[in-house]
Image (cartoon, rainbow, N blue to C red; front, side):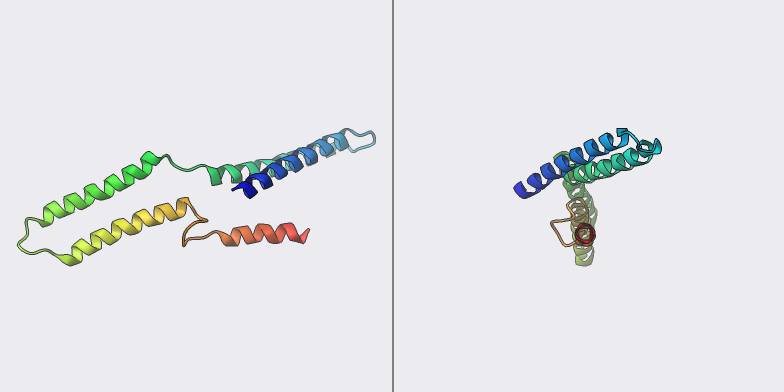
Length: 136
């Protein structure tokens, strides 16, 4: 995480430097009047998308959401178990299917929320960004 924070600080410094140079260049004598209208919005969009991407990796649902998901899974299991208790024999197929469905649902939700930690990975997106940065 320290390396990520250092890289983000470097990115912010470079963005400010690029923005400052673009503003100076757009105000320079002899520059075309449309430079400001074309260059600065594009730079602003670049800075916005990096900010959006950074915030998307930092923002996660509150812990209460995960607690409610676990509570919902337990309540569903309780209701299913209560209904199955009326039968003379236990249907192990239904018990295992219910437990597996709840476990898989919770696992997929957590995997999507933290895409760099589990089996569902977004490495292809990261590789595309690395390839783009090395190509220039």
